[in-house]
Length: 226
Image 1 (tube, rainbow, N blue to C red):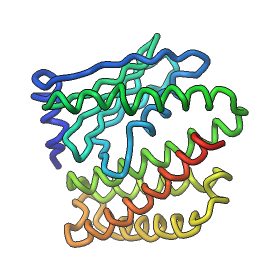
Image 2: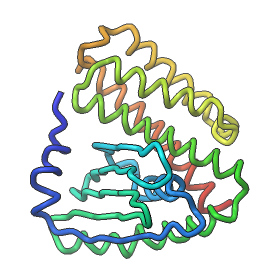
Image 3: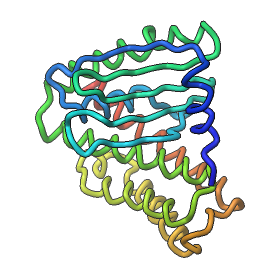
Image 4: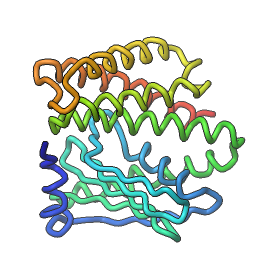
């Protein structure tokens, strides 16, 4: 198992590529709330999460690295007094995306989120957690990690979604849960310490991307229209 993109980021991208940084104040949001909103805002169907670490406390420490198909790396880091988003890019043109696309959307979503009831906020955070777990499962398959980890990532996504009314009441949720259950069973029946089979990987990845698209649309529609 080798996470080549992560190695490339740590050894080359983070020190040699052009970068643009943006800091976002927490305001009335918790560290977790702003981190999850930033994760979703910087994520899309063509984006891959190559690494994530969640801090157990609210003082900061959560960090993730995303890679998009247009060769843009995004690092989101929750610091004690602010959130830092850094884009790494190989061409000057890509740097404009930070200010032109992500930052205005994130600011608008912050304003929307802070006005919502606690129950609504908690449900949205749990759905973004499911989004992250789908990303985790996809990355594990891509780096040829072991079946046990794939099983638990998919299982976490399914179980987390099952207790969120907004998720379960949305059109299409039953099909999503059935698909997750199918792949959980598949991974469970494979040798736990072996890599996920290459011949089954395309089918799983295709299904995960379909589920991810559905989740992205669900979260975005609630954040931007509710």
